[in-house]
Image (tube, rainbow, N blue to C red; front, side, top):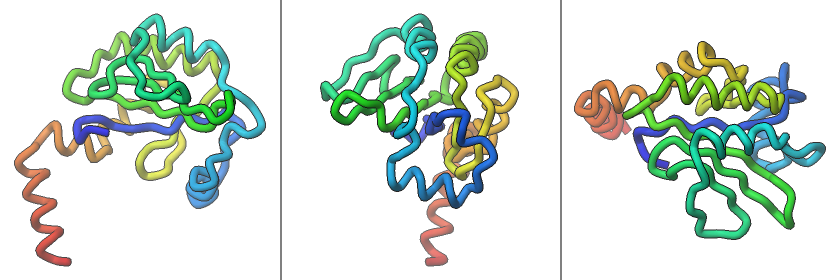
Length: 156
C-alpha cells in the first residue's frame, strides 16, 4: 500500500455492532467471510467504475490500479477470505467514489478503517474516515507528515 492510499477492509454487514477489539481479532484470524461470500454487486460496481486490474496471483482479483484506487479480493481455495478497498487521496473522484459505494451498499457490506472503526459505505462516512487517515495527513502536508515521523523517532 502506498502512503497516499487510505485502506479499508470490507466485511459483511453482520459485523455491525461488534467492538473494535473483536474486529481486530477476527481480522487476525481471517474469518470475516467464513459464513458468507461477497455479493456480485460489489464486483460489478468495481468492474464498471475501476475496470479490471492486473494481478500477480490467481488467488487475487484486482479492480483498478494497485498504486491508485483499487479493490482486491483474496481467495483461498476459491472462497473469498479478505476484501480490501484502497482510495488514492491524491486524486479522489467523488462521483466515482459515490457510485462505487452505492455498489457496496447493494452488496450489504461495511468498511473498517485503519483505526478499526466500522463505517457504512456512504460518501459522507467514507469522506470522514479519509480525512482522519494517515494518508490524508501525508497528502495535505507531506513535509509536516515526514517531520512528525522524525519527531516520533527521536522520542523512541
